[in-house]
Image (tube, rainbow, N blue to C red; front, side, top):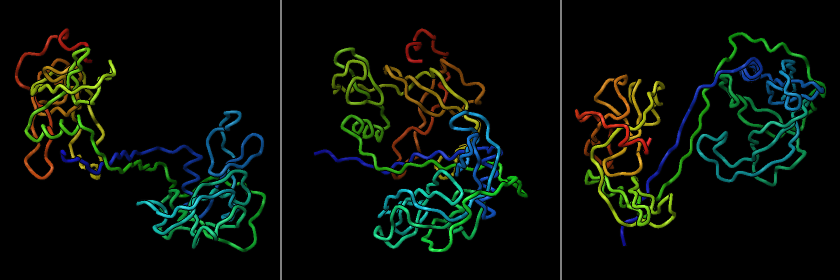
Length: 321
């Protein structure tokens, strides 16, 4: 039985978002231990606030302050917290309608167990010790048996010193990938610095990387075909945003990412282009692979570089653009 390949993979794309006046006031308020909502055209108080009325689509600017206490409207127990979640011990995800608000805010509730949580229970905000102007300035909610806050929210200007104008929003997915037969064979040939695809027995197209089945005909593929190593740039983009260091892709910008049709393949794969100024990369450019330096787990093409050949004629790759 062949070895089963598997590897941890991370899909991560933190991005920076600018804030409008309502979101800026809301997040800056959290930094100052103040919870703000916004009043809609019909008088409904929304927390968290939005910038446009969900019913009329009118712009909303009437900010109000609500209490840091509220009522759980629904909940779900989380027995196994994941990294980067609000608490590192089991907790409840709760929707909390803060006193003075008409909608509920999603956050974590610190409770000893699911038997201690119920719909209708009273809770209050536990503020983070270090606050920066983010939803995490609310560390979590905690059970509360004191007096409720005012039922009527208080008007607020939304003005603070040094307002928060932007946030970095993390988006990350960690998982373990186990490739099938076709992808496993493809990865093993990469160790030999070869690129192998599979030919469809019906349409005769060669797919790289192989998928185990023809996406056009829907039939299984098994015939292996070695392609490349050279190829043609069919289309490309210039990347001007530097990847985060956590993405393990410390490449100076700008750089070029391209679709490359390897000789003998009927599907373009993607790769980075180097060895040429970014503004000289073009469709039809002939390229060859530069393999990653030998080392543990190194089984891939690091980038492609120009071969020095004449550009390919458009008619030879137009079906792969």
